[in-house]
Image (cartoon, rainbow, N blue to C red):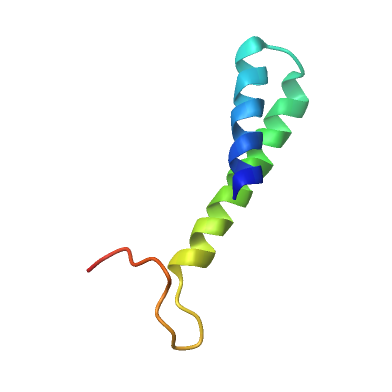
Length: 57
């Protein structure tokens, strides 16, 4: 998750600086996917076990 978050910050910085436009958009897209799927993996229960992080009490 750290890799996804760091790449999200770097790509947002490069996009705001307007350098490497197409590459930073691609990296931004993939970093959002990495972060999203990491959250989904932690919030979904697996094989009858409760998830490590509960959304609702």
